[in-house]
Image (cartoon, rainbow, N blue to C red; front, side, top):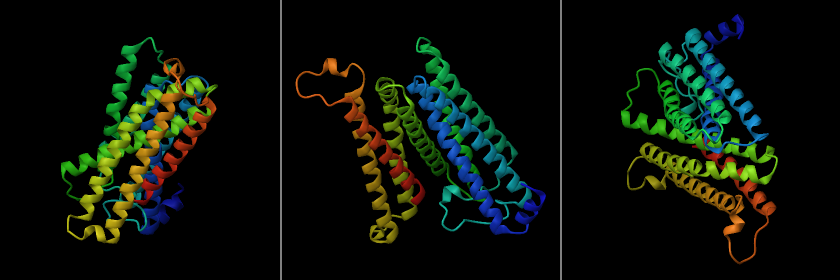
Length: 312
């Protein structure tokens, strides 16, 4: 950003809000890919050449999130994007609005957590299956880093001086972490399915990640419904309002997302290596047909998940 650009932002609150929102969206996108991709790398252990693609995406996600964080710092330092009270950006969800009074310690903690998440993801890709203890420790540490990193975005997204209860902050942190794990991991799974040398390694990676995916998706559905209901209120006619109808549509979308995830999981179970030896009787579905269903189900999940994330 040039000095002239900085001066322009300082004299234009609207441009400052827009710049901060862009940095925040880019940072959240990087966090999503880093959180889900790191866990996918540790749990799914994709085989070559998919592992190289996952490693590159992890590096790009880390660089994007880190640079976007530095952009947020610059915006706050130069134009006071949060403490100046610029408020919400019309049409942008609350999670994407400019950060409030956060402090240099919070920004430094986020940068360190992002670097640690990237390092653990790369380490998870490099560890062989024989080192089960080290793989377990690496995966457990990556799981702990997800809510810690998500908390830096939740805390940084509060308006300056806003009073928020610990329960609300905790639910929002778990919510953002679950979204990151499911969405980022699903993107990495899509990359693995497209770039794998054959159906066996890709299906094996999908099977290893499936439990993490369904757990994070369930947590996302629960926390999203809770936060939506808290914002809506508890009056007897609240569901008759436009916000109430939007909540019902949101719950319906999450239910459909869970159904699509169950379909993909069923395809993975049937297509994983060795499954045909345990099946007795009945016609066998071809691997190609199962992979087509799995690919389309995953694509539909990503499209629906991104829509739910951006519209509510």
